[in-house]
Image 1: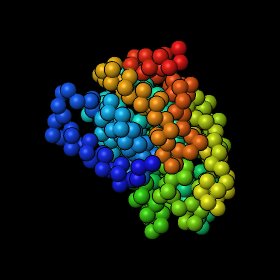
Image 2 (image 1 turned 30 degrees about the vertical axis):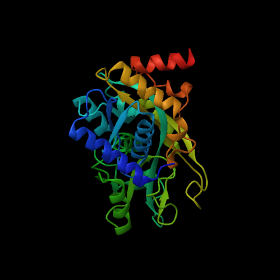
Image 3 (image 1 turned 135 degrees about the vertical axis):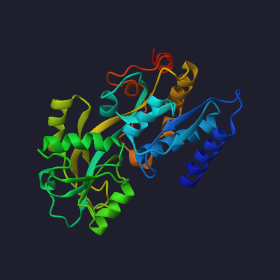
Length: 303
């Protein structure tokens, strides 16, 4: 597997290609709204860019963002060609969105200091929490969890929106009491269980499902996923690779073919056991219709 420095180089090369104006007869370029550096989305986007570079069929330019909401904003404005997003976030505003595929599952991770007295979501009353970076899917889903717990964000607890690394630093310095992150496991920035501890969110899966729909799964972060940490239940939310009707059919088909034929290379270290890169799962895009180019490829492979 190509190292992180090589991935960043690929991203920079793709960006330079865009900036200098790629010749019209070259492979199509897809600007992909990814996520925070160090996060699941960003790692997946870099792997996809590397696979595309090797295939020669596409060029993918990963765009660093703060997460799902920001990604959909960029896609709606036409500033990117495709985006990664949580299923619950895109369901809230489908508009012209079309799916390329369901790629993997994010795990909600509510972290507090290892020595914190906070044991449940209800204990967050009166505390300070980073509820995901501004524009992240964690913010969207986190507000739903807090309200189910009877906590009004900004009233019953102080809410900030920090990038993940800043949120971890804020807990370390005492500037925050908790953070919420939606990503793969283990997320290396989260030093669990040495300095941080994850709260069990299993009790909220059913309530989220009943109130907001089928986007939420009860999942387990197994013991020693974070070495030395016990098993906990949390909430899983599937991720979609989405685009719009503006993406040409042939380009969407090439992107879909990349997912199917390079699946083994498209699994970030944090995604072990949570990816859906097989045809049966890729097409399970909830109520979001497939892009016609993607549908053609799936039919060709699966009938």
